[in-house]
Length: 192
Image (cartoon, rainbow, N blue to C red; front, top):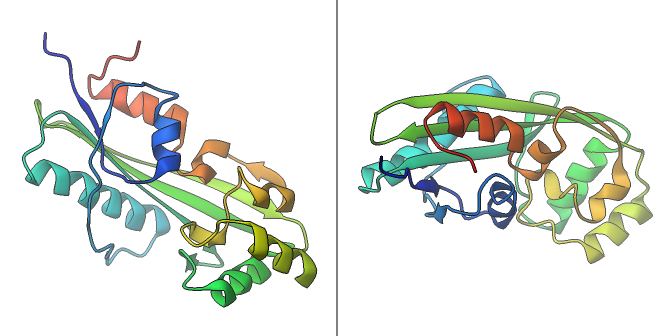
């Protein structure tokens, strides 16, 4: 039996780090797509973007098990993407201050050898304590936030803001590890 090659359609170093918790044996081929979707619900939007990422890799001729993932922060039905600049990041943090928001991930995987594919999603509710302007300013001076949805990474300096979670911690980092492991196995990937 031929071993199924796993391909991650993402350039995210955090996703790569988390996927190594499942298996050290995968290839990274970033998918360059314009993230557009006409869906209304966050999970549907993100699953569609994850599908677009994976299918870009498949259409380029790569064979194996291709995994596409997209993660975003939602507050009051508003998408908080990656900040445009420091002022935008500060505004996002003010909006989330003292409130909860939801981090959604959309997942799509396809086994090019069998044609089988699976969609899934994960949602984690994150609660932030009230943030002062001084805390926001200090955070923006020391944190790497520009490439992060919602302007924060839970595993870095923003850990100081989080009072509790409802759901998967790793989902907030960008890859719901347990769910992804189950998804890969369902498509024939052998975990050691």
